[in-house]
Image (cartoon, rainbow, N blue to C red; front, side, top):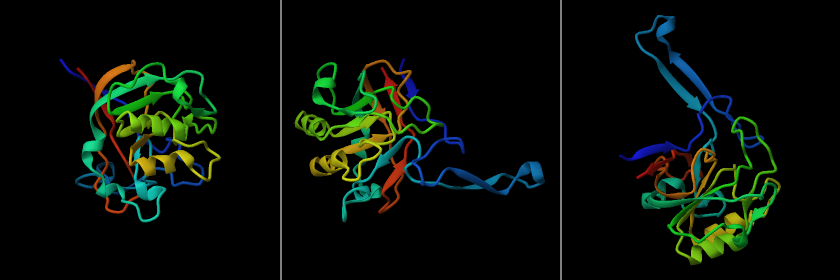
Length: 207
């Protein structure tokens, strides 16, 4: 029987966001515990919240927003790889522990261990790795950190390589309980036309 593995952090006010970005807040217009006939709430937050999909418009002027992306990018065969010893630096092609076997690759680095505490020394991708993965037919790359570029990067070299090769990105995944191997990924972004990102409920189907 198939199992669903949730690889998304809980969305609460405790969830860390990028410094100076907008944290999660939930406001209630109506509450049953205050005498209303139902609960009715709204949320206010960054679209780069927890497990999320970056849109090309986030790092490319005039590029498509997340609502215009092909949903097929975020659903289908996927591989999870554990990459050790990369905290605080970019992941190079030589760091991969084995061959790429699926068109969607999620990298488990362990370099951002607590989604409620932002640590800037997380692992990121090298542009060289992006090009190698694209050459091997990868259409989506995901990582268990807040960004595919280092915290202090302003040129966003890996984002730009991803834009050039038209890959999809997932960031903020929680992969610490996931064994390396092959799965089916489901991580559909919300249909928000023009938005620079969208939170996703990222899950792996373990056959």
